[in-house]
Length: 186
Image (spheres, rainbow, N blue to C red):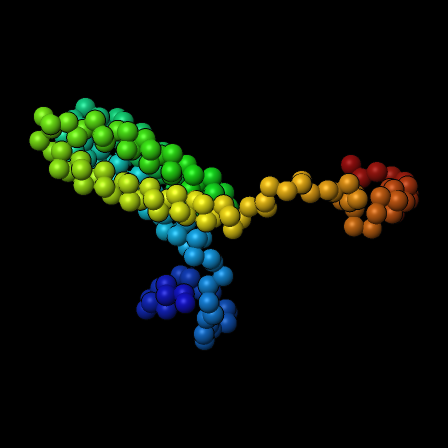
């Protein structure tokens, strides 16, 4: 159901006055893996924005002062992965999220050192990243399985010309004289 269209005051933003009224909606055409991918894409955008805007706070929370530029770079990476995940190339976006999760884990593990007073925060963040990594891997595999053509033979288009009525028909039309008496428009 389109909840945004049914919120008071917002319906004029989502529907034109001449649009028919939606009385009832059916089930979503998105598969569960596509819905999870969409959620992860939006999650990436939010996390990336937080990493960009609050890199200093995050660095202090994890006892990683001086890592602010790295966290901002990770924010840009996260936003790019989110945009890709929300695009038609969601498989690439999800796999890029998995790769990014690996970078995040490799960045957090050294912060677990015994002299870091914030290592409990790091452990919590590491547990969250590992959980999200599992979700990313599951979503990437499911989406890849759903949207891949398979590893079979490549498609054969040798019998197609790209012309709906055939090549000879197109050649015949090209040989006809223009309607303006042979004068070219230009």
